[in-house]
Amino acid sequence: EPEVTQTPSHQVTQMGQEVILRCVPISNHLYFYWYRQILGQKVEFLVSFYNNEISEKSEIFDDQFSVERPDGSNFTLKIRSTKLEDSAMYFCASRGRLELSSYNEQFFGPGTRLTVL
Amino acid sequence: AQSVTQPDIHITVSEGASLELRCNYSYGATPYLFWYVQSPGQGLQLLLKYFSGDTLVQGIKGFEAEFKRSQSSFNLRKPSVHWSDAAEYFCAVAVKAAGNKLTFGGGTRVLVKP
Image (cartoon, rainbow over all chains, first blue to last red; front, top):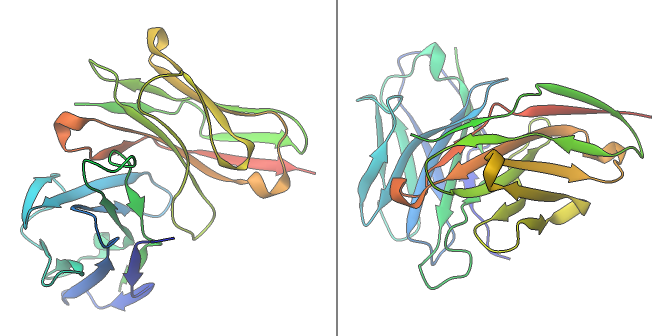
Protein backbone atom coordinates (compact mmCIF):
# COMPACT_ATOMS: atom_id res chain seq x y z
CA GLU A 1 0.00 0.00 0.00
CA PRO A 2 1.44 3.41 -0.90
CA GLU A 3 2.50 5.57 2.01
CA VAL A 4 3.99 8.94 2.83
CA THR A 5 7.58 8.78 4.00
CA GLN A 6 9.61 11.37 5.91
CA THR A 7 13.31 11.78 6.57
CA PRO A 8 15.03 12.04 8.91
CA SER A 9 13.00 10.50 11.70
CA HIS A 10 14.87 12.64 14.24
CA GLN A 11 16.87 15.80 13.65
CA VAL A 12 18.90 17.59 16.29
CA THR A 13 20.19 21.06 15.49
CA GLN A 14 21.65 24.11 17.15
CA MET A 15 19.61 27.27 17.49
CA GLY A 16 20.10 29.52 14.50
CA GLN A 17 20.91 26.70 12.10
CA GLU A 18 18.94 25.89 8.99
CA VAL A 19 17.11 22.59 8.73
CA ILE A 20 15.36 20.89 5.85
CA LEU A 21 12.75 18.27 6.55
CA ARG A 22 11.97 15.95 3.68
CA CYS A 23 8.81 14.19 2.67
CA VAL A 24 7.94 11.88 -0.18
CA PRO A 25 4.16 12.05 -0.69
CA ILE A 26 2.11 9.32 -2.32
CA SER A 27 3.00 9.37 -5.98
CA ASN A 28 -0.29 10.36 -7.63
CA HIS A 29 -1.27 12.90 -5.00
CA LEU A 30 -1.59 16.59 -5.80
CA TYR A 31 -2.12 18.35 -2.48
CA PHE A 32 0.55 18.54 0.19
CA TYR A 33 0.55 19.70 3.78
CA TRP A 34 2.84 20.27 6.74
CA TYR A 35 1.62 20.10 10.32
CA ARG A 36 3.43 20.57 13.61
CA GLN A 37 2.90 19.07 17.05
CA ILE A 38 4.76 20.55 19.98
CA LEU A 39 5.27 17.96 22.71
CA GLY A 40 2.08 17.40 24.67
CA GLN A 41 0.03 19.70 22.47
CA LYS A 42 -2.37 19.30 19.59
CA VAL A 43 -1.47 19.02 15.95
CA GLU A 44 -1.41 22.40 14.17
CA PHE A 45 -1.65 23.21 10.49
CA LEU A 46 1.35 25.00 9.00
CA VAL A 47 0.92 25.16 5.24
CA SER A 48 -0.78 23.62 2.25
CA PHE A 49 0.70 23.40 -1.25
CA TYR A 50 -0.89 22.74 -4.61
CA ASN A 51 0.17 23.26 -8.19
CA ASN A 52 3.63 24.37 -7.13
CA GLU A 53 2.52 27.15 -4.87
CA ILE A 54 1.32 27.72 -1.34
CA SER A 55 -2.46 27.51 -1.08
CA GLU A 56 -2.76 28.56 2.52
CA LYS A 57 -0.49 29.12 5.48
CA SER A 58 -1.08 29.62 9.17
CA GLU A 59 0.26 32.45 11.28
CA ILE A 60 2.91 30.03 12.57
CA PHE A 61 4.35 29.82 9.04
CA ASP A 62 6.35 33.04 9.08
CA ASP A 63 9.28 34.18 6.93
CA GLN A 64 11.58 31.65 8.58
CA PHE A 65 9.64 28.82 6.95
CA SER A 66 9.51 27.84 3.32
CA VAL A 67 8.29 24.86 1.34
CA GLU A 68 9.38 23.48 -1.96
CA ARG A 69 8.66 20.64 -4.32
CA PRO A 70 12.06 20.53 -6.02
CA ASP A 71 11.29 17.53 -8.21
CA GLY A 72 8.37 15.26 -8.96
CA SER A 73 8.60 13.34 -5.72
CA ASN A 74 9.97 15.32 -2.77
CA PHE A 75 8.22 17.95 -0.69
CA THR A 76 10.44 19.84 1.72
CA LEU A 77 10.00 22.16 4.67
CA LYS A 78 12.89 24.51 5.40
CA ILE A 79 13.39 26.46 8.58
CA ARG A 80 16.04 29.10 7.92
CA SER A 81 17.14 29.96 11.43
CA THR A 82 15.77 27.60 14.02
CA LYS A 83 14.55 28.73 17.42
CA LEU A 84 14.10 26.72 20.57
CA GLU A 85 10.34 26.93 20.13
CA ASP A 86 10.59 25.18 16.75
CA SER A 87 11.24 21.92 18.60
CA ALA A 88 8.31 19.73 17.66
CA MET A 89 7.18 16.76 15.63
CA TYR A 90 6.59 17.77 12.02
CA PHE A 91 4.13 15.76 9.96
CA CYS A 92 3.81 15.77 6.21
CA ALA A 93 0.52 14.75 4.58
CA SER A 94 -0.73 14.37 1.04
CA ARG A 95 -4.12 14.15 -0.63
CA GLY A 96 -5.13 12.67 -3.95
CA ARG A 97 -6.91 13.60 -7.13
CA LEU A 98 -10.60 14.51 -7.36
CA GLU A 99 -11.47 11.24 -9.06
CA LEU A 100 -10.12 9.15 -6.19
CA SER A 101 -12.58 7.92 -3.56
CA SER A 102 -10.09 9.03 -0.90
CA TYR A 103 -9.95 12.58 -2.32
CA ASN A 104 -10.99 14.23 0.93
CA GLU A 105 -8.63 12.19 3.09
CA GLN A 106 -5.09 13.19 4.01
CA PHE A 107 -2.46 10.50 4.40
CA PHE A 108 0.15 11.26 7.03
CA GLY A 109 3.81 10.38 7.20
CA PRO A 110 5.40 9.08 10.41
CA GLY A 111 6.81 12.48 11.32
CA THR A 112 10.21 14.05 11.93
CA ARG A 113 11.07 14.94 15.48
CA LEU A 114 13.03 18.20 15.46
CA THR A 115 15.03 19.09 18.55
CA VAL A 116 16.58 22.56 18.69
CA LEU A 117 19.31 23.00 21.31
CA ALA B 1 -12.98 29.56 11.06
CA GLN B 2 -13.67 26.03 12.21
CA SER B 3 -12.74 24.78 15.68
CA VAL B 4 -12.79 21.42 17.44
CA THR B 5 -13.29 20.73 21.12
CA GLN B 6 -12.50 17.51 22.93
CA PRO B 7 -13.79 18.14 26.43
CA ASP B 8 -12.00 15.23 28.09
CA ILE B 9 -8.23 15.56 28.41
CA HIS B 10 -7.79 12.18 30.10
CA ILE B 11 -10.01 9.13 30.36
CA THR B 12 -9.21 6.00 32.32
CA VAL B 13 -11.13 2.87 31.46
CA SER B 14 -10.88 -0.76 32.54
CA GLU B 15 -9.97 -3.36 29.98
CA GLY B 16 -13.14 -4.83 28.53
CA ALA B 17 -15.25 -1.80 29.40
CA SER B 18 -16.81 0.48 26.84
CA LEU B 19 -15.25 3.75 25.77
CA GLU B 20 -16.74 6.95 24.44
CA LEU B 21 -14.70 9.99 23.45
CA ARG B 22 -16.45 13.25 22.84
CA CYS B 23 -15.84 15.67 20.01
CA ASN B 24 -17.70 18.87 19.18
CA TYR B 25 -16.97 21.12 16.26
CA SER B 26 -17.88 24.62 15.33
CA TYR B 27 -18.55 25.41 11.70
CA GLY B 28 -21.48 26.78 9.72
CA ALA B 29 -21.91 23.73 7.52
CA THR B 30 -21.06 20.07 7.88
CA PRO B 31 -17.33 19.60 7.59
CA TYR B 32 -15.48 16.39 6.86
CA LEU B 33 -14.86 14.64 10.18
CA PHE B 34 -12.02 12.38 11.24
CA TRP B 35 -10.69 10.50 14.23
CA TYR B 36 -6.96 9.77 14.51
CA VAL B 37 -5.06 7.74 17.07
CA GLN B 38 -1.48 8.39 18.14
CA SER B 39 0.58 6.01 20.23
CA PRO B 40 3.48 7.52 22.21
CA GLY B 41 6.22 8.77 19.91
CA GLN B 42 4.34 7.61 16.85
CA GLY B 43 2.56 9.20 13.91
CA LEU B 44 -1.14 9.65 13.28
CA GLN B 45 -3.26 6.71 12.25
CA LEU B 46 -6.70 7.30 10.77
CA LEU B 47 -9.40 5.39 12.65
CA LEU B 48 -12.41 6.51 10.67
CA LYS B 49 -13.90 9.36 8.70
CA TYR B 50 -17.26 10.89 7.83
CA PHE B 51 -17.93 12.74 4.62
CA SER B 52 -21.67 12.24 4.07
CA GLY B 53 -24.41 9.61 4.18
CA ASP B 54 -24.93 7.17 7.02
CA THR B 55 -24.24 9.01 10.26
CA LEU B 56 -22.83 5.93 12.00
CA VAL B 57 -19.44 5.07 10.58
CA GLN B 58 -17.30 2.07 11.26
CA GLY B 59 -13.55 2.24 11.49
CA ILE B 60 -10.56 0.09 12.17
CA LYS B 61 -9.77 -1.69 15.45
CA GLY B 62 -13.47 -2.02 16.33
CA PHE B 63 -14.12 1.71 16.63
CA GLU B 64 -17.23 3.50 15.44
CA ALA B 65 -18.37 7.10 15.50
CA GLU B 66 -21.71 8.81 15.18
CA PHE B 67 -22.26 12.16 13.55
CA LYS B 68 -25.05 14.21 15.12
CA ARG B 69 -25.72 17.34 13.16
CA SER B 70 -28.04 18.83 15.76
CA GLN B 71 -25.32 18.62 18.39
CA SER B 72 -22.35 19.34 16.10
CA SER B 73 -20.78 16.23 17.53
CA PHE B 74 -18.82 13.29 16.25
CA ASN B 75 -18.26 11.00 19.24
CA LEU B 76 -16.03 7.95 19.04
CA ARG B 77 -17.01 4.67 20.69
CA LYS B 78 -15.67 1.21 21.27
CA PRO B 79 -17.77 -1.47 23.00
CA SER B 80 -14.89 -3.32 24.66
CA VAL B 81 -11.49 -1.74 25.17
CA HIS B 82 -8.22 -3.66 24.86
CA TRP B 83 -4.98 -2.71 26.62
CA SER B 84 -3.52 -1.84 23.21
CA ASP B 85 -6.09 0.96 22.84
CA ALA B 86 -4.15 3.07 25.33
CA ALA B 87 -3.11 6.08 23.25
CA GLU B 88 -4.04 9.65 22.45
CA TYR B 89 -7.06 10.23 20.25
CA PHE B 90 -7.57 13.30 18.11
CA CYS B 91 -10.75 14.47 16.45
CA ALA B 92 -10.25 16.63 13.37
CA VAL B 93 -12.34 18.50 10.84
CA ALA B 94 -11.64 19.62 7.31
CA VAL B 95 -13.49 22.13 5.23
CA LYS B 96 -13.40 22.02 1.46
CA ALA B 97 -13.57 25.81 1.24
CA ALA B 98 -10.40 25.99 3.34
CA GLY B 99 -8.45 23.66 1.09
CA ASN B 100 -9.30 20.68 3.25
CA LYS B 101 -6.72 21.68 5.85
CA LEU B 102 -7.28 19.75 9.05
CA THR B 103 -8.13 21.46 12.31
CA PHE B 104 -7.46 19.19 15.27
CA GLY B 105 -8.93 19.05 18.73
CA GLY B 106 -6.73 19.06 21.77
CA GLY B 107 -6.77 15.28 22.08
CA THR B 108 -7.95 12.82 24.71
CA ARG B 109 -5.43 10.54 26.38
CA VAL B 110 -6.87 7.12 27.12
CA LEU B 111 -5.40 4.98 29.88
CA VAL B 112 -6.48 1.34 30.14
CA LYS B 113 -6.51 -0.37 33.54
CA PRO B 114 -6.00 -4.14 33.68
